[in-house]
Length: 192
Image 1 (cartoon, rainbow, N blue to C red):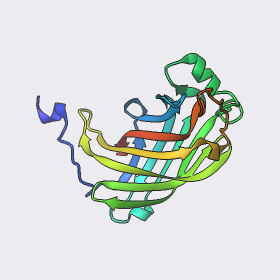
Image 2 (spheres, rainbow, N blue to C red):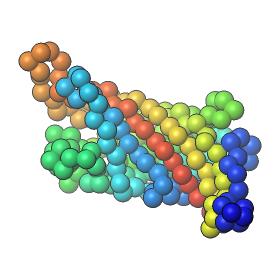
Image 3 (tube, rainbow, N blue to C red):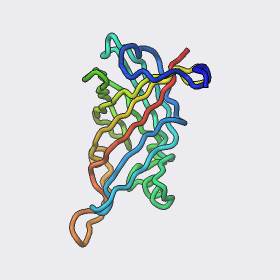
């Protein structure tokens, strides 16, 4: 294949990433992991979201990011569980239909790592959260779009956001862990 069809090779250095980017929802994942019954992990994601970021590679603190997630789009692979997660026991989607994140600080922490701190709002409660993102590269796709990629992870306590539903187990422990791992696989397209 010619390079015009296959795209150009990925650049994996944070040398020149400045610009405005919109998250490509079709090629990104906003997910989470919770421990269930103290013995296994349940993974889920949100399928409807939108976000963008403005990066300034020469002045990282001037960079910004924002994401809005539609709570009703939660998907754990089990409709009964997803329905329960939409209720007031968990996210209360009818009264709090969106989860939002707005950055308050961005800093480069290593050659290929950026820490994004911001205000995360879930179920009407806002708390500061920091996500460590690893830059996975940039490339020009077959359609001429400049794409950029990041993978990130962070851990929160769901009780900090008023999500406290649980059930005690006969063997000790609880049904759902308080600690939740957030996972981000981001592909974004640079504005022309």
